[in-house]
Length: 129
Image (tube, rainbow, N blue to C red; front, side):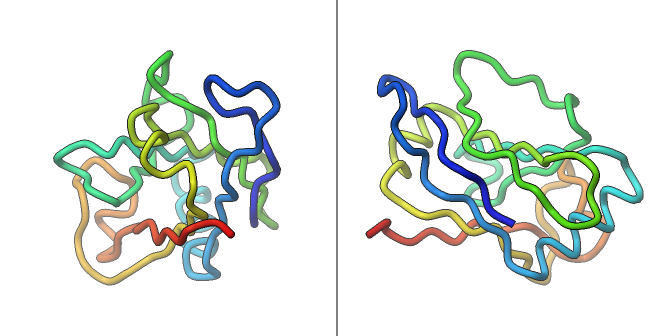
């Protein structure tokens, strides 16, 4: 449930911080995959989503030069990796952290697929050692 190393912007071959999932997040992703098909995450750090990564059907959120692919998360029971994208500006702030996707009760953004489920995804970060 984690991603391997990748290249960070401006530093070819550098390892990206690991992105992991709690068991609750993995279970919710499996459920959402069954309902919506292939999925992706985007963490923009914008004013509306705070530290909640947005979960979309794969390809529904257009990424570009202002985004970095941090991870391709592989989960048992999900036939394709779930890409985890982050904005370059957020990456600049969080590049020294380990990111964990978790699930908490409550309603998050209406744009993220888990919103109708009464829960929301949340990023927990810890300084990388």
